[in-house]
Length: 68
Image 1 (tube, rainbow, N blue to C red):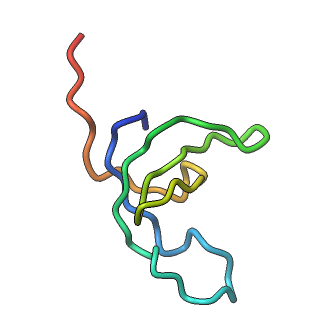
Image 2: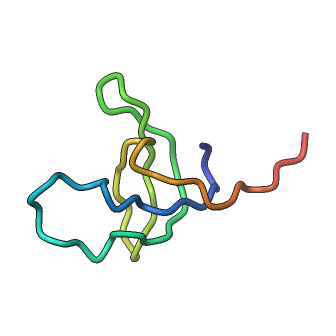
């Protein structure tokens, strides 16, 4: 996944026992690639905020059309 890709936040992205979040299933746009220690992550603009998620917590919806 790269910056500009549209992603959906997976329902299991939050730990078990946490309060239900309005972000479950929310759609966002990756604005920057990141890392959490050694785990690939992404900064995602969703709901008017920029939040960081591990890539495994995101489902790709659509890729940005890139020309080579």
